[in-house]
Length: 251
Image 1: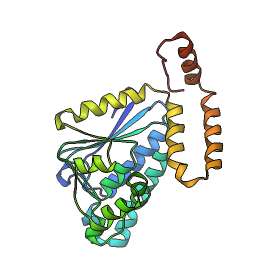
Image 2: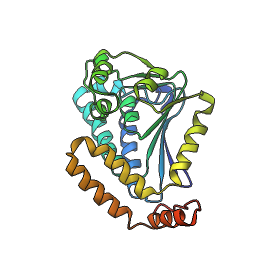
Image 3: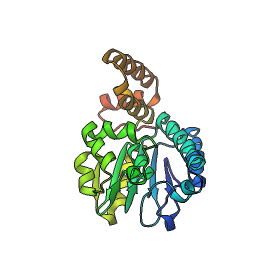
Image 4: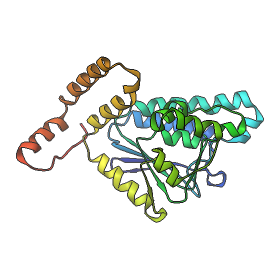
């Protein structure tokens, strides 16, 4: 769904609390490919229909044929995440009800996470005798530190929204009735920002753990140089000197 420069991707298997089956995984990949080709999208919202965000991967798919089922689910999900990581448009996760397993892993990849009061979080993989996928082992230690990440992953305990906020898994908890409005306000704010600069910033932050200081300084210099060539950069500089709000167009 598109509203102006904001694209919303809604997981839509409400009778299964949006457990990800193969068609849904492939659908997410198709959406990621479409978004990667559309520079007019300047913010993306991930949300779930019905009573929850995403309850994890579809266990019926895995029960029928564990090896092939895992490959059919993980392949497109991982390719989709790789594409999302290249985008300039920030990702916002709008979470309610439950985020478990692959649903929690997907949530962790977002740049912002707003969750409704009463939401429950569980990495859950260990409870079915599996290790994690969908980038959880990359994102979780970066967000909460290694000790907390190991506790969340190895014990499989359920976390409340307050727990998730305290640990840094989410940005903030919202009253359920206000969640969508707060997410849309944030999405519109981001969509009116300097999109190319937002993209450079999100990629610099996400890759900083993998570089030495000198490598990161070089990456920052290159990214700044690319931003300096944009119309939004010129608009921002001009706005500073005219003391007027900058009108960013995303290019």
